[in-house]
Length: 159
Image (tube, rainbow, N blue to C red; front, side, top):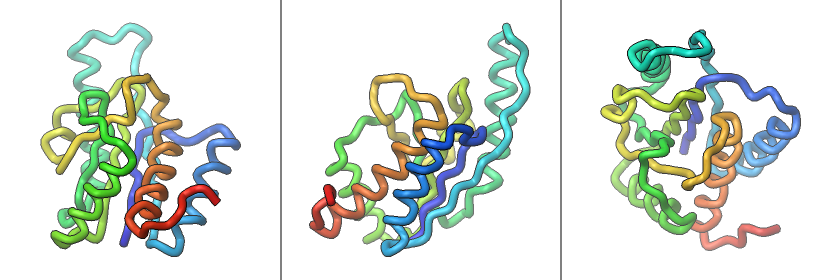
């Protein structure tokens, strides 16, 4: 099993890096996890909606280049479906049964996602109705992947 978390921007806070490292270590027995960080596009302080769409499309093109054709693509998006941890685990398990062994989780930049990403995604999930930084979304995503694997194996999550 392989999980890729592909995002715009870099993790800057050390406490977030430590949290991500902890869940990455815990997932090592389940499969490989990789993080791909891509640079944000520069944008003025008051972009027009057309400029914003161009920026989102440029970021989407960079993200799309990192996705193998055979991967199951999960776009984390405010417009996506909200799932419980159990539903998320069941969703991954169903995809594994149908032959997917590589899951790419896509996290856009601070301005959201382009429709180019929504068209490529096998599904769009929302991490909740609250607004999260795209950096925080990475930590929560890796934690939820870990939790999903524990649920799938009927193992206790809390150690």
